[in-house]
Length: 310
Image (tube, rainbow, N blue to C red; front, side):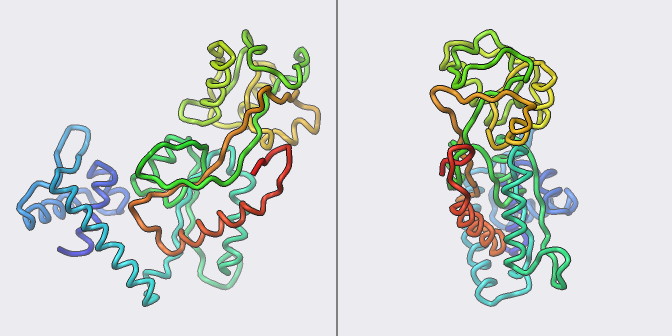
């Protein structure tokens, strides 16, 4: 068995679909299919169940996957020990919630690249960095299928194939238009029954937090719009379409400028932000250094009663 064949096999197993695996590997679908057929001929067993929606591992496929991962990890160890060109790869694929993509994550990424002497503009090789903004659900899928190395998102996450590290906690607040009747501060969610809400699309932690808080308050929230970004939510709230539950950090400027009403909740609500990665795959050296750097830097974030309750 060739190492590349095992990498192709693992990509198909990760994605559950030969076409998506080929796209991930940036090779043709027939080439991937041929590699899988060759592996099955070599082992004398079917490695995948074929279905109209994709493929799933057979028992033989699960066994091969277990050994293939061990082989890949051993090769990575050797590459790191020998400092090969492949080990010096500077590729990093990060997933991040849209609500976190405009401040902490880019600032920490810039600081990391400077520490690695890879920041754009310096006379050194550039890093190949990809940043994906998506919902919690989509980020988990990206980690599981290998499209992303790391993702920063809402917790809790209950997925046995993932490792999770808590980074910080954010205070959640209710926002309303400035010309609406004044909100009690703090406000119990039961007092918000009958209000119209603006929130994120399904798959985002903020939406889940809103529905949990409303149900705890004894009602099902009436949602007018489900949007893709907090900036859009802020715009619709300012325009008077309803109220919302958001992170205090994301609306600090609008509230300071008097463009929004803001009220704390009673009991106080917060969301945990964490970092996830696959626990059955060893991160390559460069993403692993960023993982360690991010976890160290978030310990240094300011502690206060407005945004972060680390």
